Image 1 (spheres, rainbow, N blue to C red):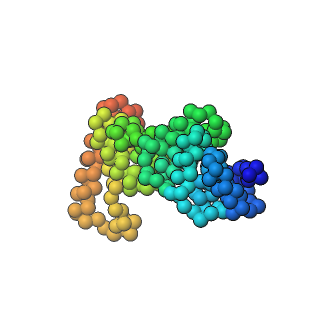
Image 2: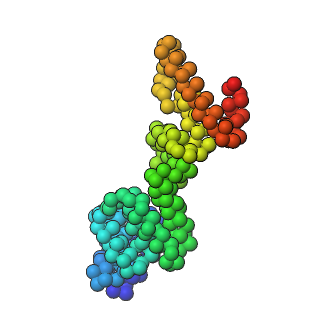
Length: 242
């Protein structure tokens, strides 16, 4: 049994694609043997074997089950990994609320390494941003829209979805001026429209020209709202449009 625990650091490296294991399958066999005897560290590392598919067939649901058992025993890495599983819906239903709870518990334990603590905080910030945005917090909605549009802060870049989120952020009660400005410039410059005709050099139809003019008027109204709220960039921009 003790020989199996020599693989602890190696299995963690496997999960991060660092280093080359001597025998992945054998190390996972040892972890499973100890895990089935109720050892929390072994449960955690067996979960890593299953999550990464290194030494075991990949099985996110089984990995989450082992993480949960180890987390219930107070293992900080298991709490952290279980939080990530819920954040991304790997083997468990996606739930930013549950993810935030486990990530916070992992941090509160004080037993994460410095690197894991920093990573856990980043994921906790992302989970909380999603939670607050879902609850209608204007600042969180704006920040989530920006992150999705640019692909920052752990979000997958999806400009179309980001623009839709920014529109919702601008239309929300108590919208922050930055959301009003961002949505206004999007509409004014037609970033939400199909520009294939322009790229192809085809002349615009009268209907397309009318739509562009309507977008500019609508966009200017949003920028004016941001300017009225004291957003400096909006003030300068709107002054140049009038």
